[in-house]
Length: 182
Image (cartoon, rainbow, N blue to C red; front, top):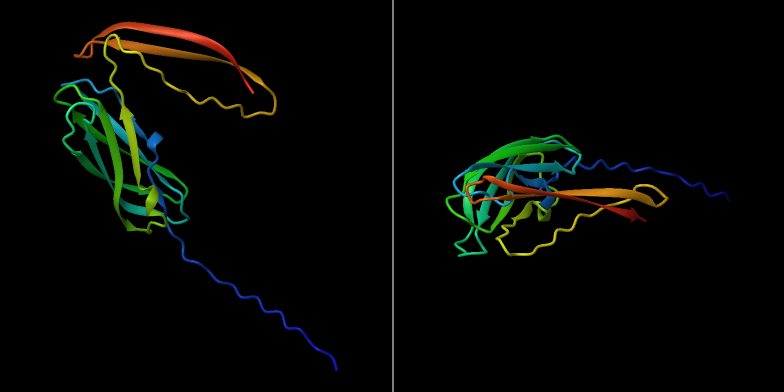
């Protein structure tokens, strides 16, 4: 008696789904910190990590002044984006701050008209726009990576602009530092 094996391949096709996302690094203000009474723009990059186009992606931008007198999230505006599968689109907002504030921006995807949203936990980004006052000290960490297999010598150049509250440039403090990146 001989047994015969039948091999059957079952192909299941999953539907394509978009996955729009906002990263913290994708919130890009034209001024950081914001200058009171001067209009600024904030660009929000929307990434689509899915394999379907996302259309009608409603992006909401808000800010809060948590460093002074927290009064909740203040609405800036809504913009719609269309983001191709695997691609990125940007939306831009304009806003003028009425007074000094230690500002935190929040960009959030409110809804997606077509294409779906595979993972909703990546629909919000936060950006802290720090305000430095005279006499304050601060540190700013810049991640530096080495894309190769061998140690590389890099020169990091930083420029700090010192401005008055009205935005007038008072001084520029450039400095450079050489380092070895393993």
